[in-house]
Amino acid sequence: MEGIFYVVGVGPGDPELITLKAVRILQSCAVWLTPAARQNEKSTALTIVAGVIDPSEKEVLHHQFPMKKVHIGKIPDPEVREAWEDAAAMIHRRLEAGVDVALPTLGDPAIYCTGFYVCETLLRQHPDTVIKIIPGISAIGDTAAAANTPLCLGDDKVVIIPTVFESERLKEILTQFDSVVFMKVYKAMDRLVPLLEELNLLHRAVLVERTSMEDQRVHYDLKATVNKELHYFSTLIVRKSGTVNKQFAREH
Image (cartoon, rainbow, N blue to C red; front, side, top):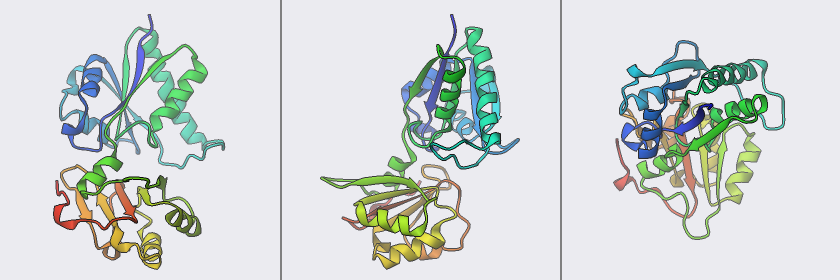
């Protein structure tokens, strides 16, 4: 009997935010495939999991997934596709031997997760593969918690987007929606701040770096972030129907 492949959301960074189910699944799997963006880089997901489970008794497969954009409907970069295929091959060899494999991933697997590309690759090559997705607490939800603000209330319309669109498209989105969550804005604040200022939305925005991690930072003065080096894990929330309550914002 073949093993099961699990994609496990381990939350945004604080090990206490890993769900009980995620812990149980990770404990039960003999093999973990841990993703990293660069060769020999430490896996953030593994660091989180190691806060609650000792990885020394697991077979830990470190695998690099290049940080290159993937556009839906377009052929991915060859290096990206090769990384998916290599990961799928490593996983399938162990599944074929009857061993369960887990891929711990930051936040929630449903939101911009490389694990789903691995799942698609596995199913294309081996259609009978059994795959289970374990949800996790998202960085989006925890960013809102850090700023003590809801993402949406009542009949608010919400959109979650990466900052890859041109400024006119971002302006259109900010105009159309009541709440906008910008993911991974670490290189985009020089474009976003003038846009928010033009739309009179600076006072309705909050930026959180490395949400829930030990060095979490909550930014209210967004002008001060322009041309500053921000961490890759930076999320911006803009909510037009309410101001950000600085008094009760959470520092980690």
